[in-house]
Length: 239
Ligand SMILES: [Zn+2]
Image (cartoon, rainbow, N blue to C red; front, top):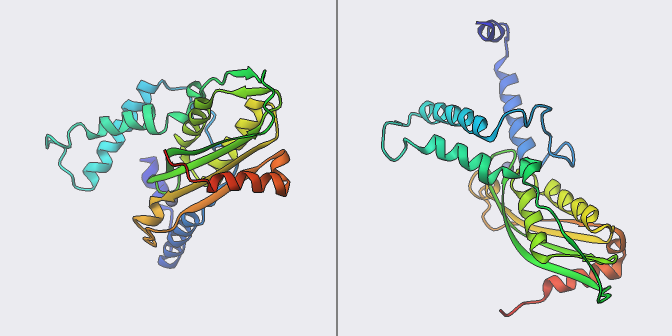
């Protein structure tokens, strides 16, 4: 009842509604983001994964039914449950710090003090403005400060931050800052090249563009180091 009263007290003019809707579209298309940290509620982890799945399942069923879909159909019946599980356990599992990969470092006994580049790390994320996929490649580099990281951990870190509702700028910065912390050095670079399905499959429907973002810390802010890194990215690996 309370909700009904609130709604009846709002008298919006048609122009206001149109204006607000176009603002919302524009904000989504312009990659507006508010902070480097993913904005999370204080009660984000009060519920268990199972409780979250049950709630999302109920709501997704309502969304499907509102669109007119018949959930008594065998093919659609289990979709709400499937989507809810996929959100919590798979594509948005990176929201939960409990799923953050532990990063083991090794002593750099062989004194390798050149740049290490790990390129073409494929990732799948989702745009936080439209909840449709972002598909991309991440290219990472660092210069060892005495410790080295297991190479697969670089992939795992990219995956962890990608499995959140994201904007590409934030994803790039979160990976860069995490690498700096994990490796104990500022000398870190991240370049991400990604395709946003909210640009390709809807809205402007541009299927050929891709978006590039970068993060350069420490020595990578120097032009020669940056150029060396970018040159490695041009290398065509033939295997
Ligand atoms: Zn989007």
